[in-house]
Length: 284
Ligand code: GLU
Image (cartoon, rainbow, N blue to C red; front, side, top):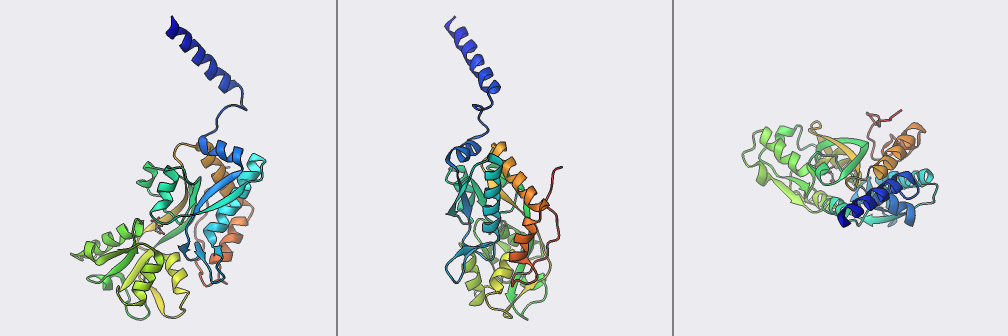
């Protein structure tokens, strides 16, 4: 009898929550942001020009501008002034900080992979890159030239795995040994600069970003050998939050703000020129 009463009470409470929209939970992240007015955004700091510390010691970049704009627009959707709290993440922490609830969104040149989707959710693709190899100028002309040589890449990235697969595909029997993993992008660049590796391989825009530090010294060799569609990482199963991010990105695309930010960082007048060749998915 007692059990029966609890079931009836539970059902009544459930019905009440569904019928009173103000009380219904949209999702833990969405609700917390709406309540606190703060979005904790995970951003890289060593990735030129996505998110890096410039010579004036300012933390700037494409991902930073995109994250700021997305947060502003989610504020518009919620009819609330939102503040962004920038949290430094790297290749290793950009997912774990989401799962441990230290950040609400990760805008961190992160490729949307099915494997990663088991742990976190992703927004629609907001940036389209692919992997290439950077080398000292004039030394190599094609990807096959790196067989039997050392390639640098960053730990915990898709680049690291793609590099091993590339060397294997090209017939390098020691592919695993030949991909040398470093913690950070800047470590990879230094290894290349000091000829400790023949090439550094990761997403092409990161390579372009670092190469621009020393114009004329480096070049991209060969063609793209992977697709790297970037999504904003968000916590698993919070569709209200993910929708707000997606709607913000789509609205930015539709009113030209996305293109403005893109051109600021990757346009023809920048040292990081990278033509925009795809469209952001827009739902009617
Ligand atoms: N986009 C790739 C990834 O998500 C490599 C670049 C990076 O991690 O910084 O693993």
